[in-house]
Every structure is written in structure tokens, then in C-alpha cells.
Image 1 (tube, rainbow, N blue to C red):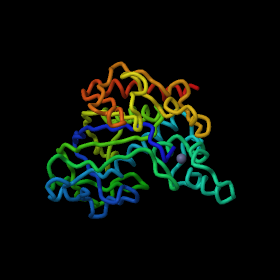
Image 2 (cartoon, rainbow, N blue to C red):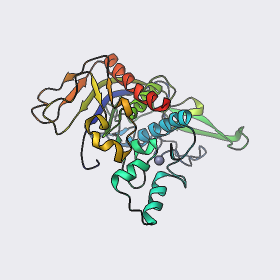
Image 3 (cartoon, rainbow, N blue to C red):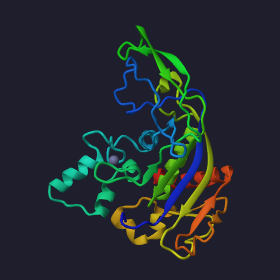
Image 4 (tube, rainbow, N blue to C red):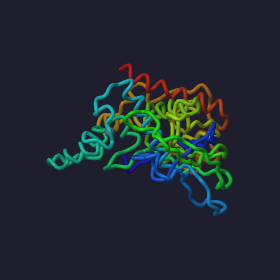
Length: 311
Ligand SMILES: [Zn+2]
């Protein structure tokens, strides 16, 4: 399956700070707020070449992964084969490495079958995932930011450290272009992505540093959803259908342990537009480009996740 492309989802939108946000370089692991490096991560703007802040794709992917892990654990429990800790000893990557070291030499299908729900989307040490978030740049370079003062919290006592004030750079404006993709997906995976986007839009998923201080809230505008089925000269299903891997290639279901069951084909309330010439080019694609329609299509995919949970 990894050498084939059966389906592809591309979603474009805009994230706008709703209050201060701060995404530091080097991620958040081991962040000590008493250190002076409370600067927003910067790079050069891809269009103008000017220095600008941005939201690294790796940060977005990390935020999406940890949120989806939380949803999976809430619904299906703490079992590492259901949702592993990717950095822990019982991670899927370590488990599969161990099985291969003991001479099992798993095939690609057998490895996929072993993966927990989160690694089936985001990948693990041995295999890259099926989810990609591109770096999100502001439409125009944004380099001068307001500086806010914070108080370092003692992580043991929970009280503020004496004299431990620090400055942090925050973004309070800017329109960051969101581009995410999911390839070779099952519809329940799209459903988890949909739940995550909704939580992001409703302020339940915060981005970057200082979540407990109220930082990290964004508004979400969805602009374009494109679902393509490469390598075909006809549209599989109707212009209202979402087709997961099992619906596209039934022979994968058993060897890969696909979890879609009855929901590898889900009907949406809004028909997609067939992308122009996409059939002639052997890559039929449905497009939704109105915000409410995109949310409605995303919402339809959630039924596959709830179907999996209740089984
Ligand atoms: Zn895993």
C-alpha cells in the first residue's frame, strides 16, 4: 500500500491568532520559562524572502497528534496497542523493531496491522505517517511583535518564583496559511482530523507555548477541501461519497487490518464539484470550497470514527 496512492485529502485554510500565541523554536520539550529565549520561531518568507515568524509544520503536526491521542485514549482506553506513547518504551516503533529483531521480518502490511490508531495516521520511528502539515506562513512577512511579560511558575510548588519575570514575544495578528494532507487514509482517520479541526476552531486545542496562561487560541477559516483518487479515469463512487482505502481496494482490508468496516464509504450531505480535467489526467478529484460545506463534509467523516468506537 505504501507504494500505491489510493486516496489523498488536501485541506487549505487560514489560522488567525485569537489573543496572543507563541510558538518557540525547538518545540516545547524541556522549555524553561526562566530562559531568555522566549522568541517566536522565524524563517524567511517563501514569497518575499523577508524574515518572518511562522508556524512550523512539525509544531502543527505535534499539536494535532497529541490532541488525536487524547481523543483515542478517552474513547478507547490507555492500551499502548490502541494508542502508544511515541517516545515511550512501548511505542509502536520500538515494538515493531523488537519483533523484527527477533526474526519476524514483518511485511509492510503486517507492520501496518500492528500500528496503534495514532501511528496509522502520524507514523512512527520506522515509517513516516500519512499526515503532513506544511509550514504555515503569514500571508505577508511579520517580523515585529509585541512583547509581553510573564511570571515563571515554579513547577514543583506551583507558586510564582520570586523575581522570575520574563519577556515573551507573542503574535496577536497575522493570517497563517494552513495546508494539511492525508494520503492512503481510512475514513475514521479523516473523522479524527475533523474532530481536531473543530476543537482547534472552538478553542479546545491551543497551539504553542503557554496554554495554561491562556495563550495559543486561533480562529480557523476553511477554504478548500480536495479529495483525489489517483490512477483512475473515472470517479469511484458518487460526488457525495468519501471513500476510504478498504472501499477502494477490498483486498487490502484483511492483510492491513483496516478498521473501517461498514464505514469505508461515507455519504456527505453536500456534493463535491468534480475538479476540472481531473478525470482526463487520471486523478479524479472532488472539491468543496465553501466553508460550511467543508465543515459538513468533515462532520460526515466523524461517523466512521464513532462507528469504530462503538464496535
Ligand atoms: Zn503507535
